[in-house]
Amino acid sequence: MLHLTLFSLFGLICVAGAINLLAQRHPINSALSLIVVMGSLAAEYMLLGAEFVAVVQVIIYAGAIMVLFVFVIMLLNAGEEERSPGSRIALLLGVPGLLVLMGTVAWVLIRQNLGLVSAGALPGTPPAIGRLLFRDFLLPFEITSVLILIAIMGAVVLARKEH
Image (cartoon, rainbow, N blue to C red; front, side):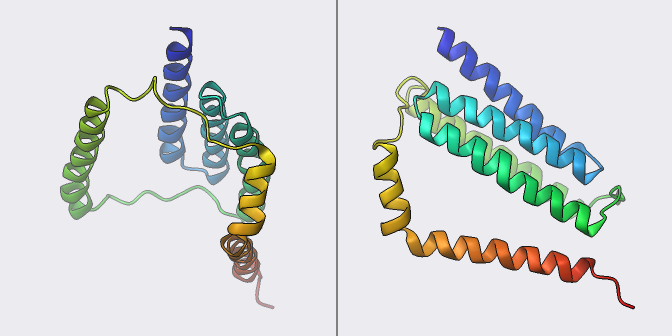
């Protein structure tokens, strides 16, 4: 019962952080809200018994990637977001799409008997996961690191002032 209560609590914190991330007008506040989401996801992983994934979530995502996001935001000198009146097409397509998505998730959860109790940790030890990451999935791992490097270089080019 305690696990389900904590799981629900951290799930609510995660959803509240995600909503706050979207509602913020300043990019730094959005980045801080994303850190709250990443931290609550790490707590969810801990409750599911995936300690390695929880630690990676904190070290890599809440640590390194968020520092990179904040660095790029500061480099671009992004100010407060200007609000536009909104798109009617987005409203007409977004609300039914959201309802279909929520209905699908509810249907899958009901069909799986609320699958929360049967969820388990990822199989494998940290050395086995490391072998998978650096041997079997080395190419996608390296492609991701090159894409992050390209994004940083693009941010520097965009932020550079012409003389």
